[in-house]
Image 1 (spheres, rainbow, N blue to C red):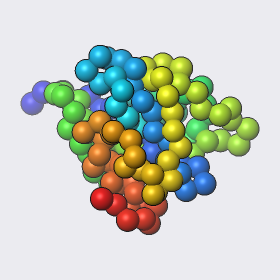
Image 2: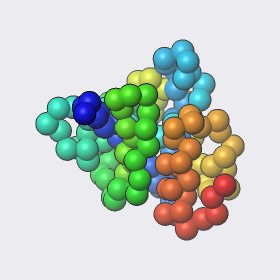
Image 3: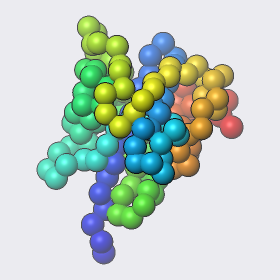
Image 4: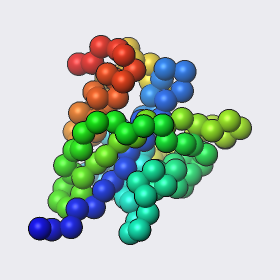
Length: 136
C-alpha cells in the first residue's frame, strides 16, 4: 500500500461567507479557485498544518472548528481533507501571500460564481451543507 499524503483545505468562514483563493501557480491550476491550505508535514496534526498553512498563505491567525465529512482524491498519493475554520479575534485580514493572486469572500448565493478546481467542488458542496444552504 502506498503512503497517502494528506492535503488540508480550509473552509474559512466569516459571517456566513466562505473564503475562496485563486491559484497563481502551478500554470495548469492558475486562475482557478480553491479552498486555501496545503500539505501536512510528517509528524504534524492536520489541524496544526491548516493553521500553519493559513498563516503562510494568507497571513492570518485562524483556528479549526470541525472536519468536513469526506476525503477527496487528488493526484496520487495526495488526498484532500477539509476543516471548517474561523479567523481568531484580532487576526489580520487575509491577503494572497503565496500561490494565490486573489481572494474572495463568497456568500452562499455566490459560491458557484468562481471556477473552483475540480477536486475542491465536492468539498465546497459538503461545506455548503454545513452552512445549511442549498448546494448545486
